[in-house]
Image 1 (cartoon, rainbow, N blue to C red):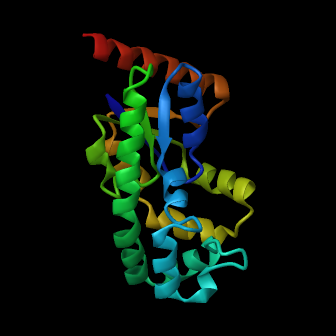
Image 2 (cartoon, one colour):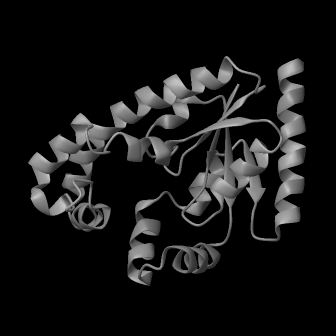
Length: 200
């Protein structure tokens, strides 16, 4: 069984994934995979450099994410081009990693993806788990964590699926607006629920 874990920016997806990890559950982080496919030496990085020009490659030969983010948020058709290039590569690696987890001791696997629904990755999973917090909390947590401008965070929020739609599509929801203990309690309950589903 594969559980797709998603949530808006700043909702605490990685923290929740680690809480499942402490219970012996393996996970694949789609963001990590997305960074890997555009790392120096990868064909996708060369294609991005050719398409967008040298200003999106930093002096170390790595992708300048801030420069690229600025271009694609201002020009949706450029974002579409980028997604058509990277999404199939990301998907291929995600599938390989999930298969690797499933062949090991973990009873089920998590696919942690901020764009689970938007990118079509939901078809890779058996159930969806949304990490939910109020929008004002997403904003304050992200500002504190990333040190970016409020306008930048709001642009990311606008590009993501609405909180209401995300929750409507979820099979399970974790409310992560309170303390760590509250979150861990919900993880423990869901972990038990998933294990029971597998053994029934």
